[in-house]
Image (cartoon, rainbow, N blue to C red):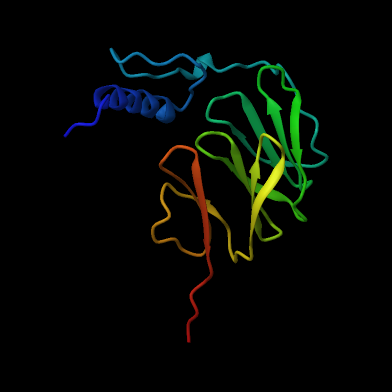
Length: 178
C-alpha cells in the first residue's frame, strides 16, 4: 500500500536534493520543479556583512542548523558558539571540552548538537538549555560523518536516522592484529 502523502514527500525530497547539490546555493526560497535548480557563482555575496569575533583562536568548523536560524562554530579555543542568524547575536556557548573542537553536527530537528574534540570525546548537547546530554570517550582516530551507522571503521561516526530528531553517535576501536 502506498503511504499517505507519498507524492508530496517525494517532491520535497527532490527539492531538498537540488538544494543540497547546488554548489553556490544562497537563497532560502524553495526551488521550482519546472526546471533544475542552480545558483550561479556570480550571485554569491562579495561583501562582509558581519564579523563574528567570539573565538579567541582559530575557527575550525562552522555549520548552519537545518532550519537556517542558528550557526554553530567550533575552534582551537575549545569553545563552541551558537549564533542567531538573523541578528548574529550569541545565543549559547558550550565550553566543556579540554582540547580544541574540530567538528560538530546538528541533529535533524536542530534540538541537539554533537561536538567532537581532540580531547578524544564527543559530547551531545541539548541546545535549548546548553546542557550536555552525554559524553562518548576514547575514540582512537579521526571522526567522520556518515548517513548510516552500518559497518563503521576506526573512529567516531555520526549518523542521522529516522524518525526525524533522533541522532545516533557510535564509536569503534581499531582492530587488533596479531
